[in-house]
Length: 323
Image 1 (tube, rainbow, N blue to C red):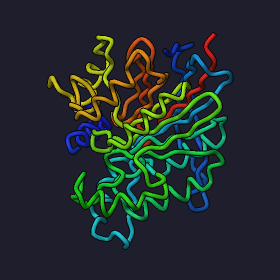
Image 2 (cartoon, rainbow, N blue to C red):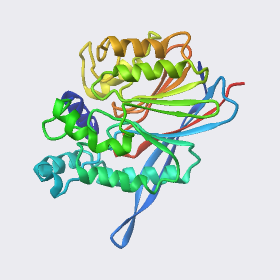
Image 3 (tube, helix red, strand yellow):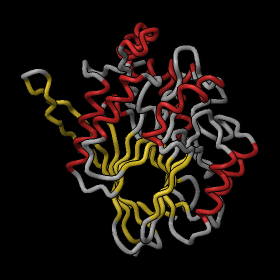
Protein backbone atom coordinates (compact mmCIF):
# COMPACT_ATOMS: atom_id res chain seq x y z
CA UNK A 1 0.00 0.00 0.00
CA UNK A 2 1.37 3.45 -0.89
CA UNK A 3 2.31 6.03 1.73
CA UNK A 4 -0.67 8.24 0.90
CA UNK A 5 -3.04 5.27 1.12
CA UNK A 6 -1.59 4.31 4.51
CA UNK A 7 -1.95 7.89 5.71
CA UNK A 8 -5.55 8.09 4.57
CA UNK A 9 -6.47 4.73 6.08
CA UNK A 10 -5.00 5.87 9.38
CA UNK A 11 -6.95 9.11 9.25
CA UNK A 12 -10.23 7.34 8.61
CA UNK A 13 -9.50 5.01 11.51
CA UNK A 14 -9.41 8.09 13.70
CA UNK A 15 -12.09 9.49 12.74
CA UNK A 16 -30.54 14.50 -13.86
CA UNK A 17 -27.10 15.30 -14.93
CA UNK A 18 -25.53 14.15 -18.12
CA UNK A 19 -21.79 14.06 -18.56
CA UNK A 20 -20.04 15.17 -21.71
CA UNK A 21 -16.59 13.91 -22.45
CA UNK A 22 -14.46 12.33 -19.76
CA UNK A 23 -12.19 13.46 -16.99
CA UNK A 24 -9.27 15.48 -18.23
CA UNK A 25 -6.30 16.22 -15.99
CA UNK A 26 -4.39 19.42 -16.30
CA UNK A 27 -0.92 18.77 -14.89
CA UNK A 28 0.65 22.08 -14.20
CA UNK A 29 2.65 23.94 -11.62
CA UNK A 30 2.54 27.25 -9.83
CA UNK A 31 5.66 29.25 -9.09
CA UNK A 32 5.86 29.69 -5.33
CA UNK A 33 8.36 32.05 -3.74
CA UNK A 34 10.48 30.41 -1.04
CA UNK A 35 13.07 32.84 0.24
CA UNK A 36 14.79 34.21 -2.84
CA UNK A 37 14.28 31.16 -5.04
CA UNK A 38 11.07 30.37 -6.92
CA UNK A 39 10.04 26.72 -6.82
CA UNK A 40 7.47 24.98 -8.98
CA UNK A 41 4.65 23.37 -7.00
CA UNK A 42 3.03 20.68 -9.17
CA UNK A 43 -0.75 20.36 -9.11
CA UNK A 44 -3.26 18.26 -11.05
CA UNK A 45 -6.63 19.90 -11.65
CA UNK A 46 -9.27 17.61 -13.15
CA UNK A 47 -11.61 19.20 -15.69
CA UNK A 48 -15.24 18.12 -15.85
CA UNK A 49 -18.12 19.34 -17.99
CA UNK A 50 -21.61 18.58 -16.70
CA UNK A 51 -24.85 19.22 -18.56
CA UNK A 52 -27.59 20.56 -16.28
CA UNK A 53 -31.20 20.95 -17.23
CA UNK A 54 -32.63 24.32 -16.24
CA UNK A 55 -29.59 26.56 -16.63
CA UNK A 56 -29.22 29.00 -19.52
CA UNK A 57 -25.50 29.77 -19.43
CA UNK A 58 -22.28 28.12 -18.22
CA UNK A 59 -21.32 28.27 -14.56
CA UNK A 60 -17.84 27.28 -13.31
CA UNK A 61 -16.92 25.88 -9.88
CA UNK A 62 -13.38 25.28 -8.63
CA UNK A 63 -13.52 22.61 -5.90
CA UNK A 64 -10.80 21.48 -3.52
CA UNK A 65 -10.75 19.58 -0.23
CA UNK A 66 -8.39 17.83 2.18
CA UNK A 67 -5.29 20.00 2.15
CA UNK A 68 -4.78 19.22 5.87
CA UNK A 69 -2.64 22.26 6.61
CA UNK A 70 -0.89 21.77 9.96
CA UNK A 71 0.94 24.96 10.94
CA UNK A 72 1.53 25.79 14.60
CA UNK A 73 3.12 28.60 16.61
CA UNK A 74 3.35 29.62 20.28
CA UNK A 75 -0.34 30.50 20.43
CA UNK A 76 -1.02 26.76 20.33
CA UNK A 77 2.27 25.61 21.78
CA UNK A 78 0.76 22.53 23.40
CA UNK A 79 0.08 21.13 19.93
CA UNK A 80 3.55 21.77 18.51
CA UNK A 81 4.62 18.11 18.48
CA UNK A 82 1.32 16.88 17.09
CA UNK A 83 1.29 19.60 14.45
CA UNK A 84 4.80 18.70 13.32
CA UNK A 85 3.96 15.01 13.11
CA UNK A 86 0.76 15.71 11.18
CA UNK A 87 2.46 18.10 8.77
CA UNK A 88 4.91 15.33 7.87
CA UNK A 89 1.98 13.00 7.11
CA UNK A 90 0.69 15.45 4.52
CA UNK A 91 4.02 16.38 2.97
CA UNK A 92 3.44 14.52 -0.28
CA UNK A 93 6.46 14.12 -2.57
CA UNK A 94 8.42 16.48 -0.32
CA UNK A 95 6.00 19.38 -0.81
CA UNK A 96 4.31 21.02 2.18
CA UNK A 97 0.52 20.87 2.31
CA UNK A 98 0.26 24.66 2.65
CA UNK A 99 2.33 25.15 -0.51
CA UNK A 100 -0.02 22.86 -2.42
CA UNK A 101 -2.98 24.83 -1.06
CA UNK A 102 -1.42 28.11 -2.15
CA UNK A 103 -0.72 26.72 -5.62
CA UNK A 104 -4.32 25.54 -5.99
CA UNK A 105 -5.69 28.93 -4.92
CA UNK A 106 -3.36 30.55 -7.46
CA UNK A 107 -4.75 28.18 -10.09
CA UNK A 108 -8.29 29.13 -9.11
CA UNK A 109 -7.33 32.79 -9.42
CA UNK A 110 -5.97 32.20 -12.90
CA UNK A 111 -9.10 30.39 -14.07
CA UNK A 112 -12.67 31.30 -14.90
CA UNK A 113 -14.45 29.99 -11.79
CA UNK A 114 -17.61 31.79 -10.73
CA UNK A 115 -17.24 30.27 -7.26
CA UNK A 116 -14.49 28.49 -5.32
CA UNK A 117 -15.73 25.79 -2.93
CA UNK A 118 -13.46 24.61 -0.13
CA UNK A 119 -14.81 21.21 0.82
CA UNK A 120 -13.51 20.49 4.31
CA UNK A 121 -10.31 19.39 6.05
CA UNK A 122 -8.58 22.41 4.59
CA UNK A 123 -6.78 22.68 7.91
CA UNK A 124 -5.81 19.89 10.27
CA UNK A 125 -6.76 21.10 13.78
CA UNK A 126 -8.00 24.59 14.58
CA UNK A 127 -4.58 26.12 15.22
CA UNK A 128 -4.24 29.86 14.79
CA UNK A 129 -1.23 29.63 12.47
CA UNK A 130 -3.10 27.30 10.10
CA UNK A 131 -6.21 29.47 10.14
CA UNK A 132 -4.16 32.62 9.55
CA UNK A 133 -2.38 31.03 6.59
CA UNK A 134 -5.68 30.09 4.95
CA UNK A 135 -7.20 33.52 5.64
CA UNK A 136 -4.17 35.31 4.23
CA UNK A 137 -4.15 33.20 1.08
CA UNK A 138 -7.90 33.51 0.55
CA UNK A 139 -7.51 37.29 0.86
CA UNK A 140 -5.61 37.10 -2.46
CA UNK A 141 -8.47 35.25 -4.15
CA UNK A 142 -10.22 37.40 -6.73
CA UNK A 143 -13.33 35.21 -6.75
CA UNK A 144 -16.07 34.48 -4.20
CA UNK A 145 -15.66 31.35 -2.10
CA UNK A 146 -17.46 29.18 0.43
CA UNK A 147 -15.78 27.12 3.14
CA UNK A 148 -17.45 24.06 4.66
CA UNK A 149 -16.29 21.96 7.58
CA UNK A 150 -14.66 18.54 7.42
CA UNK A 151 -13.95 16.23 10.30
CA UNK A 152 -10.48 17.65 10.99
CA UNK A 153 -10.85 21.43 10.60
CA UNK A 154 -11.83 22.07 14.19
CA UNK A 155 -10.34 19.15 16.11
CA UNK A 156 -7.78 20.21 18.70
CA UNK A 157 -5.37 17.89 20.47
CA UNK A 158 -7.54 15.07 21.79
CA UNK A 159 -10.72 17.09 21.26
CA UNK A 160 -12.43 15.39 18.31
CA UNK A 161 -16.19 15.90 17.99
CA UNK A 162 -16.23 16.73 21.71
CA UNK A 163 -18.34 19.43 23.33
CA UNK A 164 -15.22 21.50 23.89
CA UNK A 165 -14.24 21.17 20.22
CA UNK A 166 -17.62 22.57 19.20
CA UNK A 167 -17.75 25.28 21.87
CA UNK A 168 -14.13 26.45 21.94
CA UNK A 169 -12.36 25.58 18.70
CA UNK A 170 -15.03 25.58 15.98
CA UNK A 171 -15.68 29.33 16.56
CA UNK A 172 -12.08 30.04 15.54
CA UNK A 173 -13.19 29.30 11.98
CA UNK A 174 -16.35 31.43 12.04
CA UNK A 175 -14.87 34.14 9.83
CA UNK A 176 -14.09 31.56 7.15
CA UNK A 177 -17.39 29.71 7.34
CA UNK A 178 -19.73 32.65 8.05
CA UNK A 179 -20.43 31.09 11.46
CA UNK A 180 -23.03 28.66 10.08
CA UNK A 181 -23.36 24.96 9.32
CA UNK A 182 -24.62 25.70 5.82
CA UNK A 183 -24.11 28.36 3.19
CA UNK A 184 -26.24 29.23 0.20
CA UNK A 185 -25.06 31.02 -2.92
CA UNK A 186 -27.99 31.71 -5.20
CA UNK A 187 -27.38 32.76 -8.79
CA UNK A 188 -29.68 33.57 -11.66
CA UNK A 189 -30.35 29.95 -12.58
CA UNK A 190 -28.39 27.75 -10.14
CA UNK A 191 -28.01 27.44 -6.37
CA UNK A 192 -24.89 26.19 -4.60
CA UNK A 193 -25.70 24.75 -1.16
CA UNK A 194 -22.92 23.68 1.20
CA UNK A 195 -23.72 21.48 4.19
CA UNK A 196 -21.37 20.75 7.08
CA UNK A 197 -21.40 17.04 7.89
CA UNK A 198 -18.43 17.26 10.20
CA UNK A 199 -19.51 14.42 12.52
CA UNK A 200 -21.13 12.32 9.80
CA UNK A 201 -24.39 14.02 10.69
CA UNK A 202 -26.54 16.73 9.15
CA UNK A 203 -27.87 19.19 11.73
CA UNK A 204 -31.62 19.89 11.86
CA UNK A 205 -31.13 23.55 10.90
CA UNK A 206 -29.24 22.44 7.77
CA UNK A 207 -32.10 20.14 6.82
CA UNK A 208 -34.65 22.95 7.25
CA UNK A 209 -32.58 25.33 5.10
CA UNK A 210 -32.19 22.63 2.46
CA UNK A 211 -35.96 22.06 2.39
CA UNK A 212 -36.47 25.75 1.62
CA UNK A 213 -33.77 25.67 -1.05
CA UNK A 214 -35.13 22.70 -3.00
CA UNK A 215 -38.49 24.44 -3.41
CA UNK A 216 -37.01 27.38 -5.34
CA UNK A 217 -37.31 25.57 -8.69
CA UNK A 218 -33.64 25.99 -9.59
CA UNK A 219 -30.96 23.34 -10.17
CA UNK A 220 -28.87 22.79 -7.03
CA UNK A 221 -25.19 21.93 -6.63
CA UNK A 222 -24.71 20.37 -3.19
CA UNK A 223 -21.26 20.37 -1.57
CA UNK A 224 -20.52 18.00 1.34
CA UNK A 225 -17.35 16.69 2.90
CA UNK A 226 -18.47 13.07 3.26
CA UNK A 227 -19.64 11.43 0.01
CA UNK A 228 -22.95 9.61 -0.53
CA UNK A 229 -23.11 5.94 -1.57
CA UNK A 230 -24.83 5.50 -4.96
CA UNK A 231 -28.22 3.80 -4.99
CA UNK A 232 -27.83 2.46 -8.53
CA UNK A 233 -26.62 -0.94 -7.39
CA UNK A 234 -23.08 -0.09 -8.49
CA UNK A 235 -20.37 -1.15 -6.03
CA UNK A 236 -17.64 0.89 -7.70
CA UNK A 237 -17.21 3.32 -4.80
CA UNK A 238 -17.33 0.46 -2.30
CA UNK A 239 -14.71 -1.59 -4.12
CA UNK A 240 -12.40 1.36 -4.79
CA UNK A 241 -12.64 2.37 -1.12
CA UNK A 242 -11.84 -1.16 0.03
CA UNK A 243 -8.81 -1.25 -2.23
CA UNK A 244 -7.62 2.24 -1.33
CA UNK A 245 -7.93 1.75 2.43
CA UNK A 246 -6.89 -1.90 2.43
CA UNK A 247 -10.17 -2.93 4.09
CA UNK A 248 -12.21 -6.08 3.58
CA UNK A 249 -14.99 -5.17 6.02
CA UNK A 250 -18.62 -5.08 4.93
CA UNK A 251 -18.93 -1.57 6.39
CA UNK A 252 -16.47 1.11 5.24
CA UNK A 253 -17.11 4.26 7.30
CA UNK A 254 -16.02 6.80 4.68
CA UNK A 255 -19.34 7.64 3.02
CA UNK A 256 -23.05 7.85 3.84
CA UNK A 257 -25.00 4.74 2.97
CA UNK A 258 -25.78 1.10 3.55
CA UNK A 259 -22.12 0.08 3.39
CA UNK A 260 -20.80 3.20 5.11
CA UNK A 261 -21.79 5.54 7.95
CA UNK A 262 -25.30 4.82 9.21
CA UNK A 263 -27.19 8.14 9.12
CA UNK A 264 -29.36 9.34 12.00
CA UNK A 265 -32.97 10.27 11.23
CA UNK A 266 -32.21 13.86 10.23
CA UNK A 267 -29.32 12.85 8.00
CA UNK A 268 -31.39 10.05 6.47
CA UNK A 269 -34.16 12.52 5.60
CA UNK A 270 -31.59 14.88 4.07
CA UNK A 271 -30.06 12.15 1.89
CA UNK A 272 -33.50 10.88 0.86
CA UNK A 273 -34.35 14.39 -0.31
CA UNK A 274 -31.12 14.59 -2.31
CA UNK A 275 -31.85 11.27 -4.02
CA UNK A 276 -35.61 11.63 -4.50
CA UNK A 277 -37.22 11.64 -7.94
CA UNK A 278 -38.27 15.26 -7.39
CA UNK A 279 -34.83 16.43 -6.23
CA UNK A 280 -33.38 19.49 -8.00
CA UNK A 281 -29.86 18.40 -7.01
CA UNK A 282 -27.97 18.00 -10.27
CA UNK A 283 -24.51 17.57 -8.80
CA UNK A 284 -22.99 16.53 -5.46
CA UNK A 285 -19.40 17.52 -4.66
CA UNK A 286 -17.49 15.75 -1.88
CA UNK A 287 -14.02 14.97 -0.54
CA UNK A 288 -12.89 13.05 2.56
CA UNK A 289 -11.72 9.82 0.89
CA UNK A 290 -8.59 11.35 -0.69
CA UNK A 291 -9.07 9.79 -4.13
CA UNK A 292 -10.93 10.91 -7.23
CA UNK A 293 -14.23 9.24 -8.03
CA UNK A 294 -17.05 10.20 -10.39
CA UNK A 295 -20.32 8.28 -10.53
CA UNK A 296 -24.05 8.74 -10.88
CA UNK A 297 -25.80 8.50 -7.50
CA UNK A 298 -29.07 7.66 -9.23
CA UNK A 299 -30.52 8.31 -12.67
CA UNK A 300 -30.45 12.08 -12.31
CA UNK A 301 -27.66 13.15 -9.92
CA UNK A 302 -23.91 12.98 -10.49
CA UNK A 303 -21.37 12.89 -7.66
CA UNK A 304 -17.79 14.07 -8.11
CA UNK A 305 -15.35 13.31 -5.29
CA UNK A 306 -12.09 15.21 -5.51
CA UNK A 307 -8.69 13.79 -4.71
CA UNK A 308 -6.76 15.31 -1.82
CA UNK A 309 -5.46 18.86 -2.14
CA UNK A 310 -2.33 17.95 -0.15
CA UNK A 311 -1.30 15.86 -3.15
CA UNK A 312 -2.10 18.78 -5.47
CA UNK A 313 -5.51 17.58 -6.65
CA UNK A 314 -8.63 19.65 -7.27
CA UNK A 315 -11.40 19.74 -9.85
CA UNK A 316 -12.76 22.46 -12.07
CA UNK A 317 -16.39 21.83 -13.06
CA UNK A 318 -18.12 23.62 -15.91
CA UNK A 319 -21.91 23.42 -15.75
CA UNK A 320 -23.45 23.90 -19.18
CA UNK A 321 -27.07 23.96 -20.38
CA UNK A 322 -28.48 20.60 -21.35
CA UNK A 323 -29.55 20.42 -24.99
